[in-house]
Amino acid sequence: KIIILDFGSQYTQLIARRVREINVYCEIHPFNNCPEFDDSVKGVILSGSPYSVRDEDAPVPDLSEIKGKMPLLGVCYGAQFLSHNYGGEVLPSATREYGRANLEFVDSENVMMKEVSHHSQVWMSHGDTIAKLPENYKIIASTKDVKVAAYKIEGETTFGLQFHPEVYHSTEGTQILKNFVVDVCGCAQDWTPDSFVETTVAELKAKLGNDKVVLGLSGGVDSTVAGVLLHKAIGENLTCIFVDNGLLRKNEFEAVLDSYKHMGLNVIGVDAKKEFLGELDGVSDPETKRKIIGRVFIETFDVEAHKIQDVKWLAQGTIYPDVIESVSVNGPSATIKSHHNVGGLPEKMNLKIVEPLNLLFKDEVRRVGKALGIDDSLLGRHPFPGPGLAIRILGDITAEKVALLQEVDYIFIQGLKDSGLYDQVWQAGAMLLPIQSVGVMGDERTYERVVALRAVTSTDGMTADWVHLPYDFLARISNDIINKVKGVNRVVYDISSKPPATIEWE
Ligand code: XMP
Image 1 (cartoon, rainbow, N blue to C red):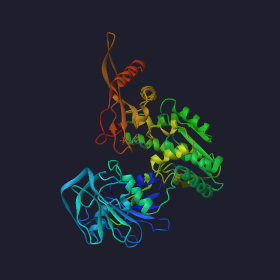
Image 2: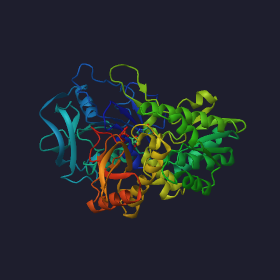
Image 3: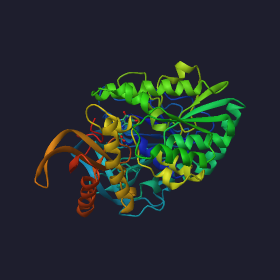
Image 4: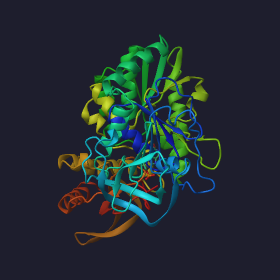
């Protein structure tokens, strides 16, 4: 495997995803809190950083057991660090070097530049530049403005890249990373969905033995893949619980429950609509809604799980981005992002935790799902928030409002599917606004509800852009909603990106 030492760059996870795409396993660790290497580590990549190597509090890794002893690649900050701290000179660049550039010189003899074309486009993003390399360093690529775009250290398998090979705009960046991890480090490209399934199933069998496991299914990709994987490993010893909180999409509960059963999962469907809506009665504050829904979920799940005899494990669909330790550059310790899909449950139930997907990125979860034979209609589903329609009904929640929003949402989502637009959108949904607006119907004035439609593109939900849905599609959907859903007389389309707006309205 490859170890990526993180200095806090926004692109660190992207480096890991690119390496994984080459079918090589890698892990991200904070530069100041890395476990000891065993024989399986074949090479190290140093990430970029928001810091300058010249900053007084710049992150300084201990490379004594790495540099010169195993393959090492510095990217951006990493490359500057390897230069600055070993006798070279890093200075602020006269102009901030940002954006696309083309290589002008490429040392094709060098293994890192194998199959890289001579005018390859690369992506620069840095305020410093390497003004002078230490003595035994040699340039292996340059752009017009950046002489030291890539270098090697003579007599070592150490390299530096000033540009970011991991970003999409570095068109041959993946080839360069592949040259490093495969040719220099000698990694076998055997990290594939099939091999993941095979090893994980074997590991789960060994770890769980004949123990009973309970898993909460949500209809989402992660919990579904976790369920199928566990089922493959332990069969009937896995019990799944799927709770209807009354805030799901129209027909969702029945449809998803049905497909789970078809996949052979031993799943208990729990109708808790009344409990959830009862507890939410009169509550308008978004955070309070979230807390109530979280609490009622735990209570409901707890009751059901207690009906299973001798259950020892709680399985969760936690994925790798949730468990990566983030770098805290200001101190020696690193903090772990806390994330529990069903926070509070393990403590309450005294169960051990098993998280079969905690090594995978989201796109890998989908690929593993495909390898497990899960239907595309389940794997390609848009993300849907845990509190469901509760945070899409602005203000207080009633059964009538839920029913109305379900109809609106159904027309919108079905419309996207029928028009072949569903897969081009990352997430879509409808919001019920807490206002009424005037309209006319015949000779009468009406005051009825307003709904907002939202459709965004994104990769991870952290940033998002609104989708330019065709006008004639929006016109048709608006018509459909106003004609078919009683109580709605106005439809608006949300054209805000995130940031500064968020995807949900609450
Ligand atoms: P925002 O609104 O923060 O949403 O831009 C980003 C992504 O997170 C989802 N979301 C939630 N998911 N519980 C969840 O499980 C929540 O309370 C919650 N709030 C937002 C949202 O649907 C989007 O995919």
